[in-house]
Length: 87
Image (cartoon, rainbow, N blue to C red):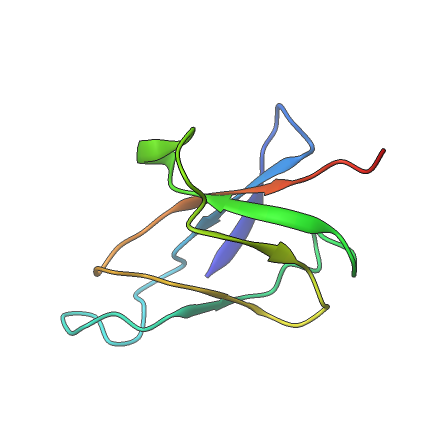
């Protein structure tokens, strides 16, 4: 798994597979993604499916400093992680 920065917007990063996910060819398991390069404890985030970017988030929550369990339905998936800015 790789968490990749968006070169345009600092409030968005991408989650993409790095290499072959375990269980390739079988029912996919959730991915554990280390968000520490992008998120700080207490940051609110949304995980969006790029095919339905303005729809309901795949996952939303508060970063607790532990890996984020990302649900994956098939053999391949990519997501956009959006940090909610603090006011």
